[in-house]
Length: 482
Image (cartoon, rainbow, N blue to C red; front, side, top):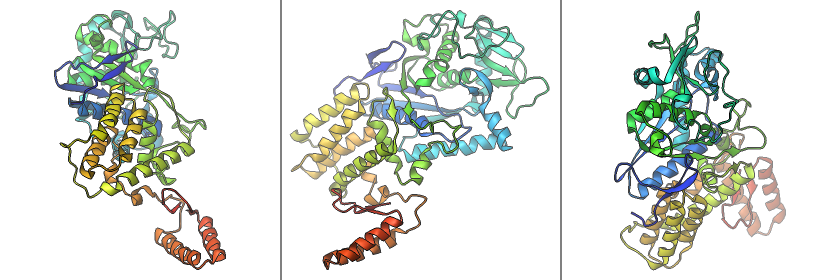
């Protein structure tokens, strides 16, 4: 175990807190996962890069990690504020496909992005439809004291728990303005935990319950799955900052009702001791929304010639609680930085690591790295420490490799599994082959050696016309890029 105590920002208390596990030597973490009605966009994936870095840091600090990520395949409405149609049912109707097929397709697409970004597999993926019987039992257990029935479903009365909305810090006398107005609701912020299938309609996903045929509410799912797998209270609950305003306060209210707990002055009463949220990825052209045709998903980045780990590095370059602005220039700069790191580990590729050995040159760099990660996952500083370690000269290669591997295990860039060829992604629009490029460059090299600069320039222009930039004088020595 490394030295600096791990401090994390708790959204519930709005303060930095030293991580103290509920179960000695263990860390139990729940992450709000995707609703599998469409491809995830890169802003969605920032949340999982953040959660992955958190999990890697906990492992690195010596904790036995149990990380759970859910898959929502029912119940999430088209408006996060508890209104509209079920996203899954809506997409299935639009595509004229089985809702189960829709869920499976987009679940596999999400998992492909997880692998491409080198995000570690959690201990368990919890799929909402696998837990519906437990959801009905959970709802039955809190219904008498905390819920009431309307024609549309079973609603949670937020006035029955202490400190409702403390996480969001957005409670007003009028309640939360974005929440659906339903006739008969006692409080504006009350939310459905079971939605009845409307008379005369048939849903593809519906189950029997004491309140009639229907489906669970989105908020109920996370309370049930996190409690079922990790037990209440568990250590850390993560998600995007958009969940902080409605979804997570509603989860907390359900957890309080289920556990018969009191107010939130004791954070454990919320179901989790620490609530952590990553900030938004901002993209000025508006292509972060899934409603905008060619929205920014990871495959689009790859199609344009960027390795997915350049996007992971781009995420690490900003603190998870800061807004991160996406631009193609910024992604290109991250790719160049990743190339430098891959070149830096190149000479160590065949050197066996010596993890037990030490060298005084690495002590300050390792201390800087440890202090950065222990300071609420300060990955921008940790990255500079990694680059300083790469720059250390005249040391045993095995020791250097072990140090780099140790840091990379936390940052998750997989540097020793990458080559120059891996990072040279072929854009989808490119028609020229790599062999043709290399042949042309060989001819150009001969022309330059013969001082036939006219021929050399002509070959460069031919390549440029086919989308190949010849990078003369490139300090990285990568020679060309598409």
